Length: 396
Image 1 (cartoon, rainbow, N blue to C red):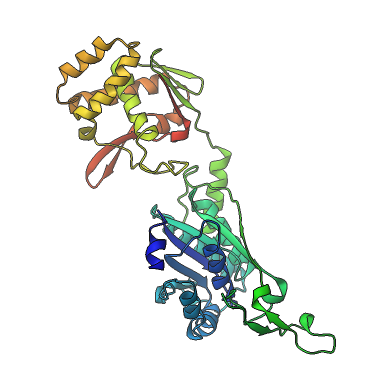
Image 2: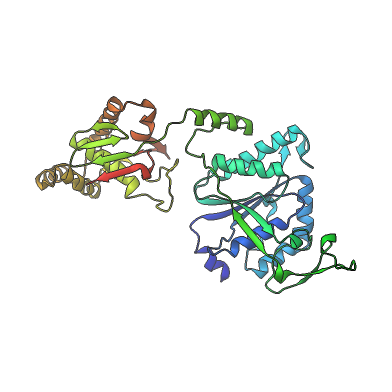
């Protein structure tokens, strides 16, 4: 019942990704903090990037010991969250898995491994990544954060978990159980005045989860490099020559489109069809909770989809505005195309719209964002405008 309630809460599939070494406590501590947030996050998948030495520690101390199973039972989580494929051991094609990260070459391969793992997971727009950089070597944390900057989407998260100092150094502390337990502290800092070992009550433990902000480059710059070094060089080059998307403002009564300060004048039918494609983003977005479009094209319709009678009726409302509420023009349009706009008419006007924009837009580097673009999905062409939805304003 608990799991059923949790499954209905989340629109995304919640994917937790850790970098970890020989302290698997950060895994349960992070999950504990996530499920106890004001808006709790219950993991659907877990991946732990580690070395061969770290894998042994995680299996021995967290899994085989039964601690993770006990943790899941106590808080109503799926006991199979950590599966065989959850432990991702860093590997070099030439020599196999790593025992530790020691040399410059090790660090270079580590960066490539983590970056490409995050790149692949970020391809799934149904998943939200929750990345923890609390464990493992400092270089592992650096590469995790950097990889998320390259490929993280607006909904992905980056965390660092912090625990009360006296519990942080205790190898027996993995999370804060519902019923308090007494732990013995092995740290000299926690010994009593006469050298006796101090006892710790888990009820006194505090687990803090810091959500770390990061710059998201995904969708803003073109990144094709395979190695971490190539991505850094490519990203810097793209930033150096980057062009921003200026706002796009449509004024229907004035029959104008402004791309930044550039005036684009269109004839009424072109303006109506171009506005219809823009409204797919502003009025019919499939993911309204997402702040950015990035590479998403889920709102792009086929020509056949835009040629229906309901689509024409919606376009006719804009046609009325273009003609300053002269209903006769819109009525004539609806009467002439009783079943909807002919597909040939739509295709012809897409070509004319793109030609008009190309002729009047001074900066050709902006064309990919503002022209009507075709993409092929499962053998079918869909059309839309790639500009970010937040950049579009349609005045009535």
